[in-house]
Image 1 (cartoon, rainbow, N blue to C red):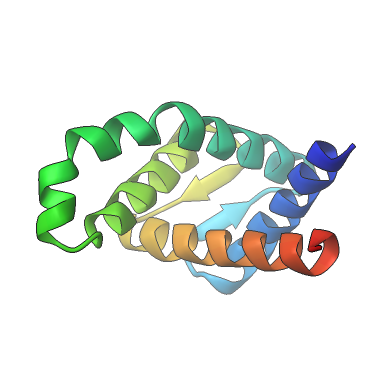
Image 2: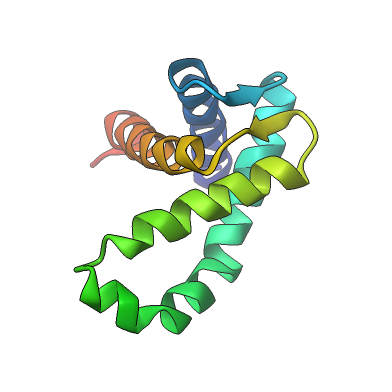
Length: 113
């Protein structure tokens, strides 16, 4: 039950991010649910591999390269899915950062212990 609630909160966070960040569009709540699921899967399956492969540059930039990885993955998901669109990589970076912050905030406010 908790996992479904977190999924719902992530979809709301994605809709809020699309509202606040220009060049990010979500067609509706169903598209936000699908996009948040795919973003979660990409973050679990693909992101760790990319972080491991780019570890030297991540260390060299003191971890800031991870922002670029998150933004590019957010941008890529926006191109893979219909109903969720991220037009630029810059919007992807800002959107990924905003999505992460809002998702954390909503989860902490509603599910925090």
